[in-house]
Image (cartoon, rainbow over all chains, first blue to last red; front, side, top):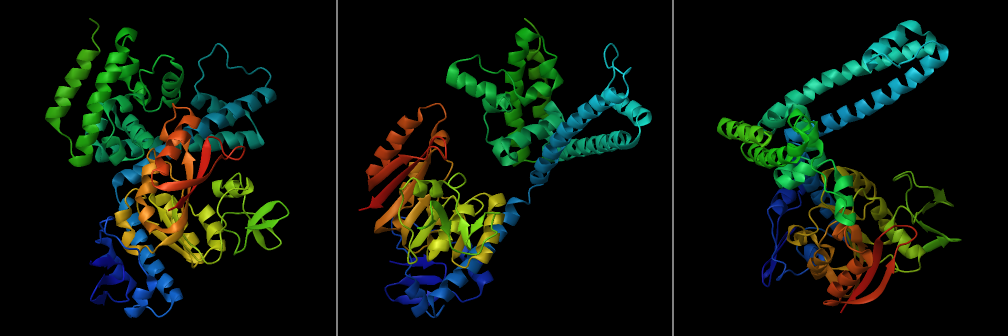
Amino acid sequence: MLQRYWFGDVDEEGCRAAGTDPAALAERAAGLRTGMDSFIPIDWEVARDCGVVRTREEYVDLLRSVCTALARKKIARSYQGRDVELLQMVRMLDELDNVINLLSERAAEWYQVTNPSFSRKYRSLPAKKMLAIIRKGARGGLSDVAEEIERLAGTRSRLMREVSARADEVMPNTSALIGGLVAARLLSKAGGLPALARMPGSTIQVLGSERALFSHLRGGTPPPKHGIIFQHRRVHNAPRPVRGRVARVLAAKLAIAARLDYYRGEAVPEFLKDAQERIDDAGVEA
Amino acid sequence: MIWLGNVLVSPGEGGVYGERTLDGYRVWDPYRSKLAALYTLAGGVELTPGIRVLYLGAANGTTVSHVADYVETVYAVEFAPRPMQDLLEVARRRRNIVPIMADAGRPEEYAPFMEAVDLVYQDVAQPNQVEIAEKNLPFLKPGGHLILMLKTRSVDVRRDPAEVLAEARAGLERRLDVVDVRWLDPYHQDHAAIVCSRR
């Protein structure tokens, strides 16, 4: 019975070695598949008798270099996809949001202590304006901090545009339906385009509302209607009675869009037109 | 196993993940490693210098490095690229670790690299953990041991962990003798260790 091992082929008549060059061995080994029913574990002494190695130590060393070479190749391949970097970009963006909010809150608290007449009540004071006030009004460290936060906010806006543009390129159909940013967040939650493309619509619908979903599955609370896709205006602007329906229809179309993005990689106008109409219809109250 | 007082340690070069050292030994923390928890709870299979181990779900190579301190050779199988990068670095410095990037549920992919082992250690977050263990039995010598770290939450979050454990145990008993079953409380929640031996 022929056994194909990483160092060569072995059968009753003997052993044919495949050389001792790790790169060549790795290449050969990448193509090997073994039927588990007829598999016989390697006896390293066969590799020695075959002339591939002389000692047990050499055997393990050579095997290690072959496996390491193979693993490096596989890692490189899995990082090749354009979606892999997008994933990191969108996670960084969300992290920046968190950090900027935390810092702004703290800066506002600090400023209030130094300036007893300052209050945010009864005035619509967006964070951006408030930071400008603090930067001008405060002195020393607080002013510096406000300036840094503003700079960070600028970085965030640029990164957001980058994320959006990259999402349009990596997932054109999904982005067309729900916008680049939300599409990228879906991607991040799913863990990659291949994973997103394999998800059913019902899963996409509740991505990002895991807490509500599991409390529903465990304790029978009402199921969540929407997760991340709530961030899209078509869902959050929809009248309450039809919001669930919009989320469901949108998610179903997103599942198709993600598959188109993964397997075709280009925008499909006919699909997008139909899908947009269908989603718009879902938002009309009966 | 080596104990300094009641602290589990392993011999070997330190600094793999910022672990503490004690008298030149590396402290093996039961709160971080499920295998260390099993030994701390007085279970498990003694790791001796002669044995060969197949480690499924090697992750970043933290526990793998401790196992490698004790045994002759460790075949470390991991599927995900990010932890694999760390594992390669650990394997570079420990010459008895063979890093294999493959899916533990598809042993035909790494069978061409495998010799028979004395111990299969499995710690994978998959719903079909018992099935994966069964698929890897051809690598285990008769009389050898399987340690399966059952992550009951990975099997099904909605079900009672005790029920999941009972089912896994019954599944394993089809082809193995179950030697020991225990929960890893208080070190790890909803994780159980099942130790089996091959007939």
